[in-house]
Image (cartoon, rainbow, N blue to C red; front, side, top):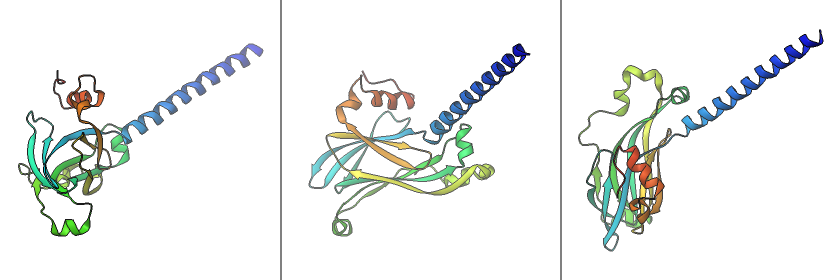
Length: 199
């Protein structure tokens, strides 16, 4: 009788341990999938005049950075964005996006209204909306909206724009870090873009 109780207790402990491991793995997977990010652009700046900059923008699959002239003391990138339902993220699907616009902006609203301004279309080779692409799979869609990220311009740093599951975000890093072979995030950007890391 005692041996049977020991066996049942041992079996229950094993089952509870397995359930705990599965639960923890599920929590980690859920967190990882819902917070997944992917770099979608890299940009650096060179000042050529008062509130005038050359912006060098690299997009996935492009070897040569695009060069744009922008005005202001900040920069902004816009995208069409489709957020998927959380369960779709958890099973491995990611939000869909299309970069639409890149431009300069001014922190001061009067300068924004009266200063020189230029915006650039990043989606000229695409047509239709991102949501239209997913119409056959609209049961996956949670929301469709425009996502935008902006920050101050710095010539000392480069910027990496990421696609999260909820929209665009930007992170700043020292410009030399993206050129360094030891720069982890720079190498990660190159690796995710399917490129060799700079030598």
